[in-house]
Image (cartoon, rainbow, N blue to C red; front, side, top):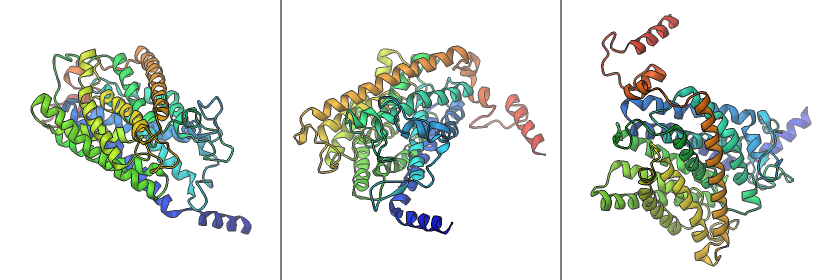
Length: 454
């Protein structure tokens, strides 16, 4: 017993407490992005749909948080069992992690801290998909979709790009994108951004258009919600990107600065497009531009200099602002522009790594086209982006189609027309008429809860 305690004290002493603290704070910042996304999305829909959209987003914390412990971490970071495609189940229930540390000597962090950080990535990725089918989606079929999708789509793709050979143990084998293809993705351009954009397109195609779209264009009901949500997302993104350095170090500081820079220049790029196209800059455009820039810099933030980050931000702001018109041109109803912002923005960031990356920032990276690396890294980035897009698009379409045909994704016509919040949750976001009997279903539920409470 005494020997065990001494060994435990020695292991604790070997942990870099500063880096561990930063990683735990980063995990909390990324967790905050999900309620921030709920506000961002909630403000962009009509008032009669705000609770449903926020509920679909918030529920991802519960579903993914449970599955990650049961088997999600193991499938993502367990030792590879099939050609770089998926991890094993040896860490199901997070077995064997509580006393394990990772990282170089003198910079060790508890594996639980890393697992907690990566959990938040999985949550926010599937939550992003709510924007593709907002204002027409039933709650319980969505919960089933979340559980199946993270298992079949997110966990494998995250294994491909995040599971580095030898990270959790000297002999551990990881995913094919990062280890065999040598693609660069610092914080999730593939697993989070391109993945969510492709999945959003598949979902929108399966679930179909909102009634009356595109002839009737619904207006955001609460732009202050949108701006506040965007601010929370930006704030959380510092944890998302700088936390991916897995330490309180110079690389984290570089990622932090690049994140701020790209978000700023993307806002300007988006607003300039709006001014030229529509004649005015909008608050919705500023919020969307910021998110587009943050999306694009996510894979690149640990590999480029600040001027490269600025260029990536401008490119994302301009390209994503133009891409929002694609849904009208091709007729798919991606309600809140997940495809244009996350899918297209992720592609911009992944590809521009092949142009702006430099080993002076990160010796573990590569030199891009502008730094003498030629096209070598660019084609690797393109293959990684294409493989992610294709896998996510096809598998998401199959999963969504199966659920739509069996459980039914969409609410009925009356619920979609009169209010999805009351139909699905027996609640309203704004109860402006509090007279008894004004909302029979809501009143009945409240009376039931009051009776149970007494």
